[in-house]
Image (cartoon, rainbow, N blue to C red):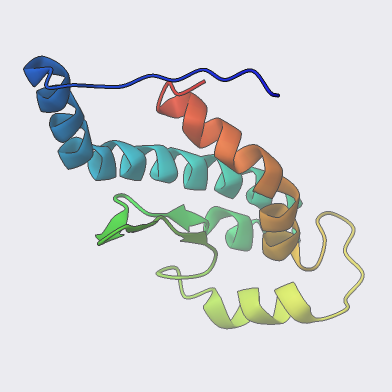
Length: 129
């Protein structure tokens, strides 16, 4: 038979209060951690961005605040938005051009490559690890 460990929580008002407080503030804390992670990934993606004049890399932007919708928390980053570089960004991202500096699919490749570190970085930011 396997060894077992059991524990229980019974009526501790302070612990219950702190857990309720944590549940109310967690979306805000998690949102800040998500924005920090979006900033980190945006910096990495900017280094992989195709480079001719530098305008595309400079067009990188990330969320100033995370969007909270119930249990869903979203932070965003991307290229070309308000700078007017968006049509150029889309073409450069998908077209099979030869780049002396940078690479195609830089945004997609960064997101996929950083997926494993993302949770660790967010957890570290929340001081969970």
